[in-house]
Length: 197
Image 1: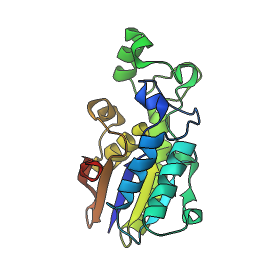
Image 2: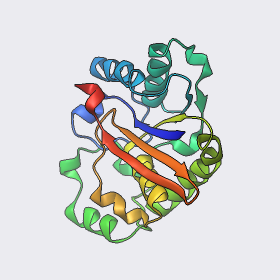
Image 3: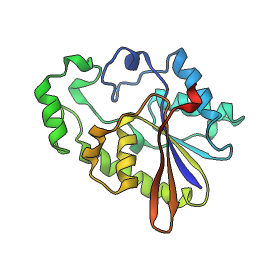
Image 4: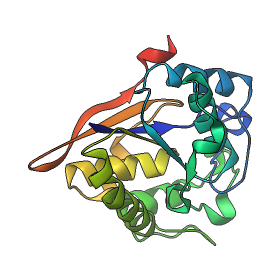
């Protein structure tokens, strides 16, 4: 049994190359189609847990619908929310100053103005995954979240520092799979996108 960690489908803000944190943006038409295709790639009986933001809830509901289940069965957990980019939310990536990127990559305690550190994100995401791990060791769980929490989930599964997130790329609607054995979690699939083609 496994934990399937899914990135939400595409939004207009993603497509235009903006940092997208707590801004509550809905899926675009492509994102809705991606959500349905994810439903064909995850176990039918899996429990579905989602970030509260609309783009994740819509993805989770699209997965549930594709599995022939009621969207009302989706559970929401605030700890799966995207990193709070503070004043940088919805800023085009090309407009973020190079010195900000440099400091962010060097320190997991860097806080964008009005936002959240990577360490704070990793703490809340890890606490959520610690709770889901017991359930996922005996039954499949699908978690629908965002790029930064998914990178945190990878660091959690591998038992490494959250700064590894700067060396990971997570595509829209990608699936990452974490299995469980006697030694704990193990990364079995990262950034799977075959279901989208």
